[in-house]
Image 1: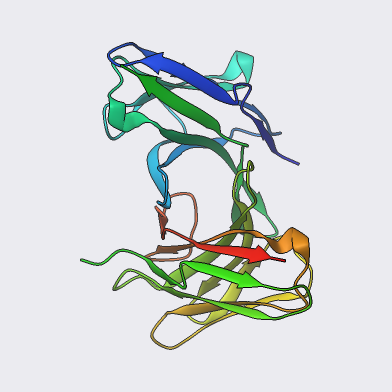
Image 2: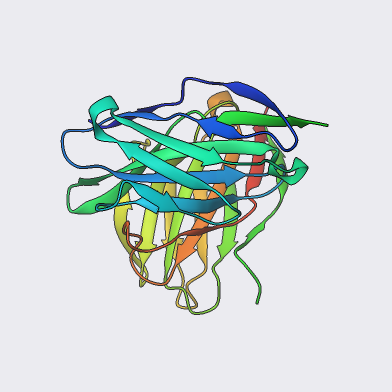
Length: 115
Length: 115
């Protein structure tokens, strides 16, 4: 069965600094990988997704992600964070089970931005 | 355009009671999925409906049931509530069956507290 681990529960970054969040996955085949963001009182919003091809993918809000197969990892990055980026970030891996496609989410990384 | 809407926003119930949560998808979307997000965890898939038929079910007990109406809105029912059912319940809609190629749009959720 697939699994997702986000090693950092909470990260604090200064406004304007760069950000990198890590996601480790376990899956027997080429994974479908996703990063979602959840702001307080909001639902989840898809930032970006990786299916195949170029290991560097661009998303919304200035985010990008890199897939590293050798490390079974999927890194979310942003060169310069803004106070509005404070939120919970979830990585998810997609798998086909019983003919259906199902997402398994990690436990999330809470991002705090300080001035 | 209105996004995914869910009602109620908050709900308090006692153990053993039954609860019904409602979701209206984005106009034109025919698929609705339900997720449970326990505090400190990532969302867990409960159900997916497409064209009023169940297309996927997560690892939840039979106390959980759902249905989709002709206007594509959906209800999630939970019977015999347990303390562990306390969570944020998220609804997501998509144009077609929620596969990985299909972006899901999440509502803000219904927060259920079971006392």
